[in-house]
Image 1 (cartoon, rainbow, N blue to C red):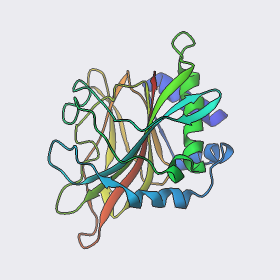
Image 2 (image 1 turned 90 degrees about the vertical axis):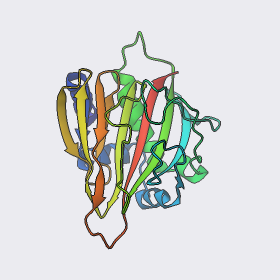
Image 3 (image 1 turned 45 degrees about the vertical axis):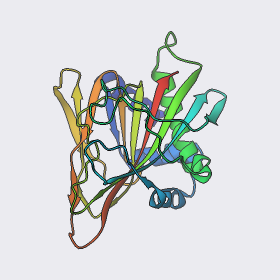
Length: 238
């Protein structure tokens, strides 16, 4: 897949890649993508994140963990999401239990195609000496809402996630302005910035080399609801 090779080259050279939907979509179709709209509509059924240390009620989410290997993908028993405070000074240090992905979403061909793409890319980028037989994969459905309360896609600020690889894919932007993705190296020198605007636009990150964050989002039209839906996938050596 030449497009996967281009993604891998960007990740190797700079530690991140911004990939437009026009590039991502054919890769996902080859991996079995179908019924995207049903998948995207599942973001309408997320629970409020009650672990926000800033007191915010602007984030909704669901979560699941998987094992990914050359033999395929297997969902793990539901478990908490945990980050140390070294990686998440705002919300880290506690086991956070979120509503699980529904069985329909977990088995959806759109999600399965995305995880297949990520496995091919991230597994191939990992040196054989450190490449695991089985990856620990975490999948997050996020909705950031904005209105009277500002919407913060990354309330913890510029951060790393404490994993090996990260993929952030836009699912939908509704009446949203801003939400610029920013990349910095480990010395916090700017590497680049871009905005995910189209469904399937994706940001790929080498988490050991790059900090990432997203600027606050606001409403284009103050009289209408506004939200930003993304899928976040992380790969970590188990």
